[in-house]
Length: 224
Image 1 (cartoon, rainbow, N blue to C red):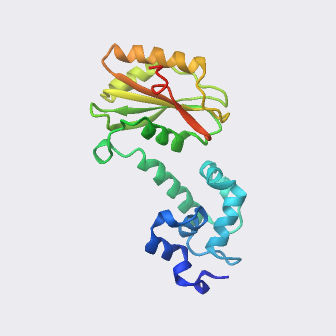
Image 2 (image 1 turned 135 degrees about the vertical axis):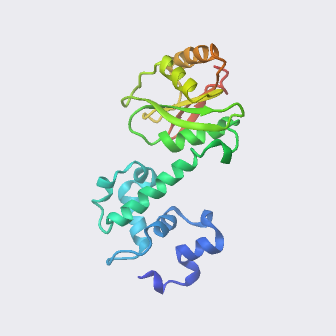
Image 3 (image 1 turned 90 degrees about the horizontal axis):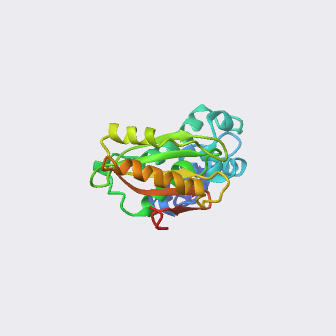
């Protein structure tokens, strides 16, 4: 059934205008991104099919253009729209400090790292470089590893913090296993980084470990 035949107030785009984006389901939001549906259905049907085939929003966020190209009805323009909307969401979390509030709550950093890293199938170690007011200067991926680990070099982190004139730093990495509990190695590298940064008056505020199912703040555990 074409969307033109739906009651106007139930069409995803109109619902978004009338009730706000938060009122829409994942499928309805995706339908707005996809706009007009293919010849075999409407955008809502297509959105639900995409969510099912990709394994939900998590699967879509991990998909490449090559992966999406195998789904019926998704041409280059729709694939580009989906991938662009996901990347815009990620980049919002990385907006410069002057337009973002300070990252003072551990939950802020946790949400950032979950959005950026939680769904990756390999381990990534990243840093939120902050100014004296704890506003974001830049996020950078610092080290990339395999499914069960990434080598971390404190000297490289220290060098990058000095290059960016950072006053503070929050580090984070993901556990692709799905278990966010920090390992002894995680605690060890946190202590070494904290000591190295302190030598040049840069504070390590937190180390956040994230997974698809949750997160752990080492600062909240009292380990920093």
